[in-house]
Length: 365
Image 1: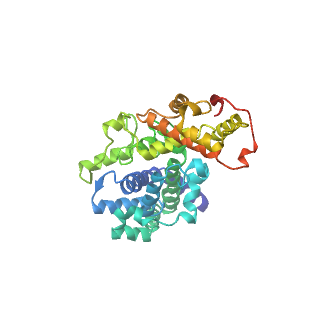
Image 2: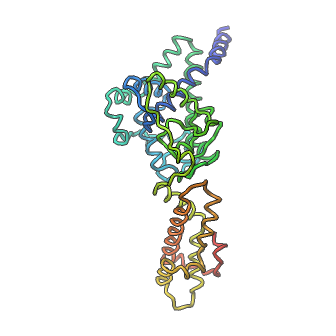
Image 3: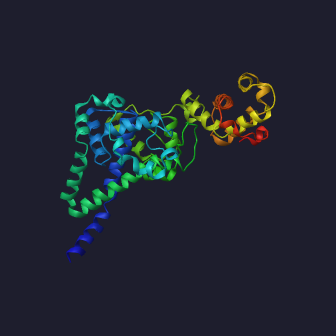
């Protein structure tokens, strides 16, 4: 009988599961992410503390730790330095594994110096599990075991996976409206589950926007709540993307151009191109050093072996979303490819062991 009563209480608690899930999901998106990580709007010091407390009730560590890691993620998104990139660390690790590794426990307070100056936030950072413990105790007092198990534990797991799916799924599945130099994607289904965080490619294109759904049909519940709070002056100065960003007419920054160019250059096999050049001059009196020099400085020499700029442009048009900076990306990718092939020409054996027949540039991909 007691076991049956306990199961019944848990089932009753399941009906109210959505309440703590959505409250804490909002605190994560509006607090951890849009406010503490990106300063997408302004608020009072008291509401800042409330946001921090509610966000930390999700047991995803302190707001200072969360914001520091997230700012680091944007600085190195989908590079080898990114702590949760599916491209480099695998899907499972990027989804949930990384947060439990002790090597990521440290907090770079210099990266969040704008918030580390608040004593109450430093106090929450020191006692990071306290908000979660308080909410867990409150759930138990209000609804007993069903409140603790369903209202807190189950909802915490759901919020965990909803949040972590942005690090994993939103960098693998979805559509890319903008060129951002990383794998971020817009995923409408994740946007529904995460109250708007699934418009991830939009976010990476303009990180400081309080609104992540850039089109009217892109549902962003977190922004809608923030807009309502702004009517009562609880929050204010909600930042929005400029019109040139909404029209996808902005010029890309040098870092995005470089990363995107590296992706484009990587689609062509520089080793095969270098081997073809070596094979073509095998038996001639042309030293490899001179060949490397000609490759870098003589267009008529490189055109016999390298893919043409038009080939790179066609590849870029297939790979990337529309951008005004496409020519800049192609030019930089071409420079990177020439530099890579030139370096390989000067590389000592064992690279020079193979002497294959020269191949046309169209096949060296």
